[in-house]
Amino acid sequence: MKYTVGIDKMSFYTTNYVIDMSELARGRDMDVNKCKTGIGQEKMSIISPYEDVITMACEAANDILSEEDIPDIEMVLFATESGFDFSKSSGIYLHKLLHLKPNCRVLEIKQACYAATGALQMACDFVRSNNNKKCLVVSSDIAWYGFKTSGEITQGCGAVAMLVTSNPRICKVSQGHVFVNNVNDFYRPSYSHEPIVNGKLSIKTYLDILNKTMQKQKFSYFCFHMPFATMSDKANKTLGDNQISQEHLEIAKQFGKYVGNIYNGSLYLSLLSVLINEPKDLSKQDIGMFSYGSGSIGEFFSVTISESYKEILQSDVIKHRIERRKEISFEEYESMLSTFVERESSSNFMLESSLTPKYCKFILEKIENGHRYYKKSNEN
Ligand code: CAA
Image (cartoon, rainbow, N blue to C red; front, side):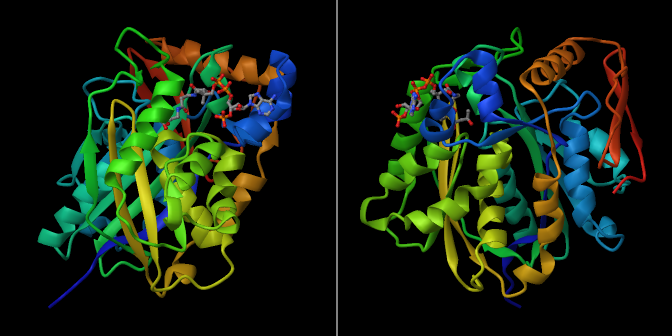
């Protein structure tokens, strides 16, 4: 029997705290137009002291998993470039928190912002050869560049979860066109908490690889890896006659403009932005997708939208997550990210925060000898 493979369920999570770019510009004494017009960003989500890449991934995955899925999930691929352990996979913590079965394989996948796409393609291959089984792909990242760096205006945090199955109800995923080239545009060696970035080279390499991988094909929608919103404008321009309309590009950028850079998940946040914010029915349409991970690798592929996507997506949950966030001041932003840096550099950390966890089910309680302890609450 012929079956298709792709994304059956999908969700997105971001934290409850957000800074407006005008507030960041005020604190840094910078022209706000550089952030809002030049970079195209309105806001960016900021990680709270009681959340990390694991809690965000669990929140997104918890939205989509039902009890019936658990016995069929034979593999978890956890894509991140903000991992805190060079040996133990972040997915092992998620496996426990989501009560996945003991014989489910768990791996952390890394290749800068490309890892989620590599994981998605590997998950599709896995399901092609095991069509009754399912694979959970999660991407979870905290984009942290450091205070007063040029990358500071391109930060954010969030997670995307995708359940990959046969006969998917959101979209079928095509096999892609890949190009790899060893470039030192963005990397984070083990001695550094912040990435080492050559911003201009990273933009040039991104666009070079887009040109090398894209196929001469007209799509009404195209989603790009979007570290900041105007990167999508630059990418769209290089498509020449195949570029999408400005109206469609704005829809593809909409969620990311208000969330900021979520590294691996940003391409998939753009896909969600199209599926949720485009009022017209997209069933049976092909959407072009471009994934880029510094270092560097790029992949162009497409997804074909299933007829049931609107019923399956929890659009209101995702929209509410973006709208409900609490605006923080520049001073609170510096304080929260200083706590994050201190926490990520500590072998022992006890959460002592004036902030009460809100709107989250999974909470980081403490770090002891480098091991993280979480608790699950009943929050909605
Ligand atoms: N009003 C309006 N526009 C302004 C402005 C103002 N006052 N001041 C500057 N601008 C415009 C500039 O003209 C520029 O636009 P163009 O790119 O169209 O020329 C834009 O705002 C940015 O200004 P600069 O180039 O001067 O900014 P910068 O060099 O200080 O930093 C950055 C920009 C390179 C993106 C930097 O934030 C950075 O390094 N970010 C991290 C790296 C990154 O995001 N790279 C993207 C590709 S790599 C990737 O995608 C992987 C990943 O996720 C990291």
